[in-house]
Image (tube, rainbow, N blue to C red):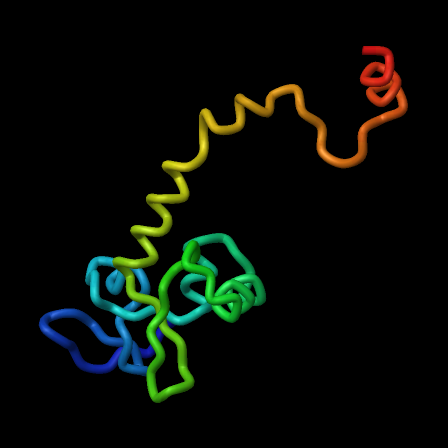
Length: 114
């Protein structure tokens, strides 16, 4: 059970002063920490940290608070998730027969005979 104290604009506030994640997802400018981003994306905390340190423009943009603490805007996380779902699907069909890794001896022999 969560200890609740007071209200903010008619919403119940948890003891720490933050709204629950489901409520903050409705606010586009709200900031999420790494654990919340991990829960939304399915990535581990270490993967999120590695992507941030890699400074990849393909990952979710982050905001630094106090020069050290990193947070992610809800709108950026949601936009990134939408972009990820748009990438999937038909892109995999072009690689339908492809294997990963080294070619087998049979595949090498077939290439050599051709």
